[in-house]
Image (cartoon, rainbow, N blue to C red):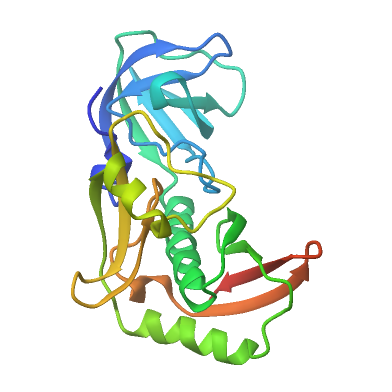
Length: 238
């Protein structure tokens, strides 16, 4: 299997592919895949497939065996057969909103430097749960700090390390509820900033914008009590 297109070119909106199989539940597997499968708090991509004058709406994408992307049809319909050459077309506006929110949540984990116990990404909204016994004192200060990093137009990039390097640097893992996948021999890290002026570096398999300015204005939303030791911090993008 080649590297998925959502990772090598997250801004690509459509791409040709070949159907290499189907699942028992009626999912479609296309190689190379353009669609990001649900995981790490980020929803699966939606869009459609085109082949031989036909079109199949895709409602979401989930992970299959070996980390493959399984495209789930929006409704029962004729599927492209194995071996069919298809055009994959993303619901780009939805994907791009997920990218903006995902990168914004990485910034949120910078301004609130506490262990993350959960999170979720929506199309324009998102949240992180923190091991935070008391709510933050300065909401306005947190919001200003978030938007200051957006305004700096910081680059967002990825790099790869092996599992031994991650074991030697356990502080890279901020999320307590989801650990980086093991067994492939390497771990993807997402960096915000540059090697010499780094703002954040953590394991992540999701899609992100190329620069923080693309996020837009971040509004800090409700901070909810989710137990004796947990607070949920919500954000909304302008």
